[in-house]
Image 1 (cartoon, rainbow, N blue to C red):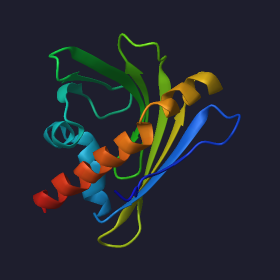
Image 2: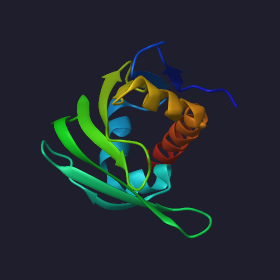
Image 3: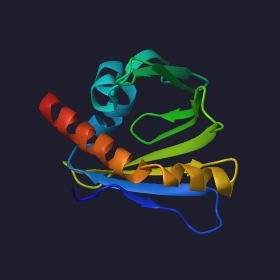
Image 4: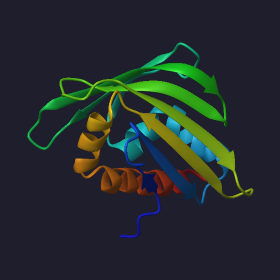
Length: 154
């Protein structure tokens, strides 16, 4: 599988830089991050709460193949439609601490757009621990599903 989503981890830094160009108009790409029924489809998770506004919050829940439930939550600090979302992200009941995510959305053409994500971890060690998991593969799979799901909405 070609990995269209690029994950860059600079040595010694506690962040990841992630970029992806989508064959989707900007408005549809942004909608995939803020419409609960779309988020559920491409993330494969249940949206319990998604308040897309400054000082809003979100809560997701997923169930693994063994039936165990896993929660994810965060607070939205900045929300500029079709441009930017700044939020925290926490995986409940894991050794990972809260991370800070900056998502920037850019129009390339009328039918293409780009997502830039900067994820900041508490430490380089935590960032490196995340990279030991199949993180790049997982985010590529998720972004591929996002593109497929949203294309069907056109």
